[in-house]
Image (cartoon, rainbow over the protein chains, first blue to last red):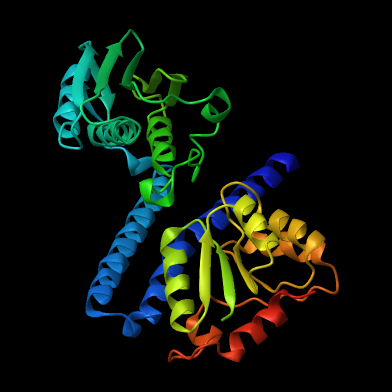
Length: 229
Length: 131
């Protein structure tokens, strides 16, 4: 009991340390560039302005994502409704195609009603789609799929990117984890945490299967019916 | 001209450090990893190291410790965005290492107008970094 309390306290401290770091970096950048604003040429000043706005956008996204994570533990986080799994996947595909130039295909779609929050599930799958875009070249295949069985529904996004090493697979759902070579500019580092939080709010889970060199499949698996409260 | 080595992997931080220091008359070289930082610092061509603790390849406090095994004099300004990192740097430095915490700011480091090789920044660096 005490161990668990200490562990959760340590988790929280690490989390706050991470949040502090992620917010201080853009603050440092904005401050540093603004202090030198007067020394620059007009073109440099214009670049500084764009850079500052970009950093503020980034901070806004980060704060919004932190709020989503905080809200995900609340009972009113989800707006549940019954929706056909295949129809939901079709809506996700429509939104995914505008993310980037990839060969977006639905490789498998079963039908059947699922009780879930369609917007949150869409948000989670689009996050996985955006990650797949980041790890693949233009024009490459990204598959979306869903399978419904008696008790659960599984939605997935499969890419043919570089894949994820086994040691990394355990860490990628952690908050602020970025894989090697992923800089701050590629994302907040909270995307997969949000996917996992959305799955967990549904009483489900997020999973990854991956073969280095051949690509990765990220799945959201949720019960078809809301768990009894 | 004083030469400053900047070890910082976030390009948008490195860029304003370079710009600000050059405008104040310093020559700067930037590297993105701890390995490069140690190698470059070992050449003896630099008067000061600006070291980010969050470098991708190795812990900044390791870089500092390793640097101190060969070079006890080079002043080091440490950049960190993490409160927890203050502890990791403080301990190995022992009682002779003095460490001061400040927000990164050109208004504090240098002067508001470009002035070549101003004395103040290096004096401050000594206080922050020297053993």
